[in-house]
Length: 544
View (cartoon, rainbow, N blue to C red):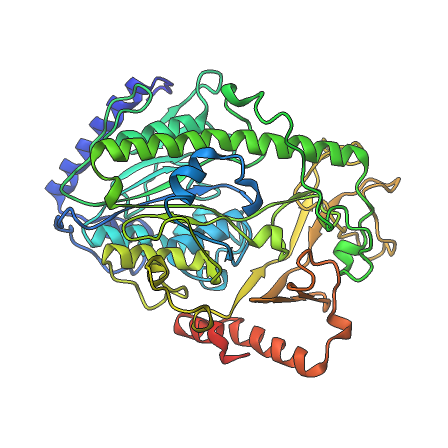
């Protein structure tokens, strides 16, 4: 099919394709997971077609932003008035692997990364093709809810490395971004449709698709197949605020006075107590700070289109009569750092800026304007959606349902989760020759180097010899309510008292007592490699 960029034409084509797909499935009687078994040769259980369920079961919409740190939501008026003031905000929401693809795999299956085996964004340790080849997509929150009688729809970003007309099992409607983070192509139910970035802002296109699905009129597009007799689950994955964080044209001059936050950890003054991958870094130069300022402003501007999306979606739900029966979940796949601890721009660390995410839930019975400080994780999203939908949760799930926290009488924090695991494999980034480090060009994790062994000096971004690599050693950490203890594969460690030192400036590992360290090491040991109920027991203190 020739690529097109008109809403109307793409909508008509999508509708025809969707109708044909329904007719084929009805005629063949083959379920999504049966198609996947045939495709991968793997051993997933076959699933028959789910029957329609009563419409009073709630709808669930997850708005999953890309690289949004928890501190960058203050310039979103619709988010505040329509979700935060009308729902519950979780002040201690975290991811357990602060990188896009591992986090999305965790969200889909409710497992730590060591159990999904999606450890990075690209092969051989991660990416869409590995997720598919392992058969992980045959049992996800989408298949569980589809089995329970839900209509399921994905709009936007799915998983890194996804660039195909293939539609994974579990999804009735599919409008997935096909390509890298700058792609403007959507796989619309098996057909690639291209949207000219000169005419369309992709997050506006995604808003259009989402609004159409719930039955309202968006910005001129036709309605799609919405089945009012069945509840629905929607995964709505935005492109914002992922770099290069291009704002919509209408927002390019917005927030001109916004300035990059500079907490005490910004361009940290003394990093001598940090591990070598941090302590080797020089202070940020003026060009790096200026580029960070620019990226920060563009990130905020790009999120204004997402804020418009929230407003359009809530209005469409109101018009369709579904608003009071819909859970709206706003979150991110990971956080982001800009300048803290002498790191330029990135996300894949165990520091607070990267593992902490925004999480707001509005929905039936959810208390309005409330904040909770329970430790909650991206591991919890899949089992939460399953419980809200009345779907069965597989035993392999490591997370726990947040449904009890969405009531007027949530369990006390003391009997909730007490700790969780943070994990990340080593990262070594080959810097393209086009990157001008001395000019302050931002690259992910521009940090301590991985120089050849024969080069004993520790190169920095400002050395005469150009930095060829940037990275961080593999890590595992246990994060409790008030502390984080990190072990690196180099043998180095970090320990921070987050009540006394919320910006993680003073690494107290060398000064900690042996009893304290043994307890934290034991807790980390209980979490390392855990699975299912073992993880929940360890989080509750079995190792602590």
